[in-house]
Length: 499
Image (cartoon, rainbow, N blue to C red; front, side):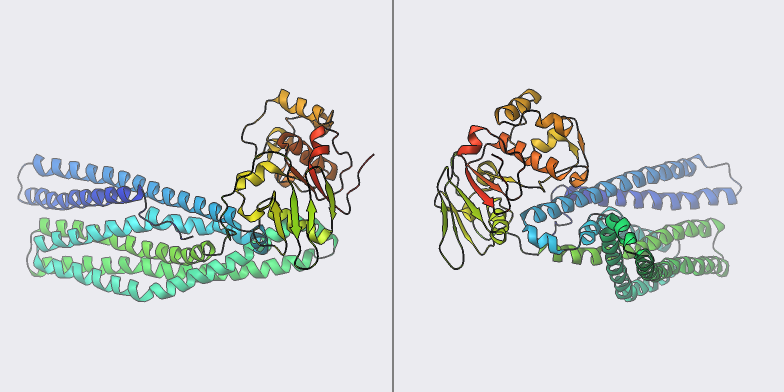
């Protein structure tokens, strides 16, 4: 996969609207500078207060403020739309990846892509790029106003702009390196914290509290040093326009005095200079965001280019009903189970087979076939409907027991249907023993016991009514429903069946 484009979809129209607002703002600010000269000229000559230039100045500044509000609002919408596409792309890639590949990555790296990296990726199209566009329009407009007021002032404007832009170009590599270093150290710290926080009491019980604190302190110190380095470079760039503005203001006043220019012209030139200073600062600020975007985008691109689990075409569908299963190991005879039969698989085999039959992995040392069809070619919907798994670690999301039981079903049954299905399957009172359908399940089922998680798996099987059941853990109280007895079963060797 590739990252979403900056100007994909509606973002193209949003960017065009940003450009239009920047042009309107430049026109309003230019009109304000010219109106300022006319007002000062009238006041200097002793004439009555000029209503025309004052009105133009008022309307121009109000228009500039209104366009700035619209500009910032559209810029935020642009950035949020891009961030939304990145979130969707990251989750889609993760959902298409092999579970084993995700497990090999440290959890902190995953989290960082949805927090720090996402903020950097959003800030460029949402603020950095719009400010750059605004500066690209306002700087020529302000320079043109300076030339209109006096050609010498135009050279002052160029002398202020060109050195600042050159400094920006020359320092961009240093700024990018500072962002990349900070991102790497911050990612390491996030991964360490994510790994250690959930097990902090257990680490303390092992006598590692001081050791872990010292290690985290060293990592945090390295992050702070990298952040300070990044801030120093960015603040130095932002300071350049301020120094240039002070020098340019002095030159405007000096040129006005030497050439005997009217005070109104000098005042208008200072107003136009202010128009030049702000976009220059914006360029420096957007450069910092561009460097952060580049560092985060390179990691995003690398993450999305990691291979997914789609090793073969999943297009074969099977009808609902009992399934035959055939498992061919790399060496030795194949294991075949016909509908209604059962087999005991070794522990080393059941995990691989379960990953294939649940669709979480297409790579396995075992060739698995259902009703004669390669399991890797079966559609996800077929595997989801026809293969059920009894496990002590079912997939759980934070929420109610009702949500946990119906996770993955195309239609959510009513509460009455849930109770009736459990009773029909021989699990009378199972839902009540868990705490009722309104029981709140914590993240990853942390508030559930081993028996609770197995019982949730069993209840899901009752609702799913699959054609093949894999049991990967001991089952204290298996249901006694007819479908359980008739479905094909693959048992791990540690399963204990009650009489």
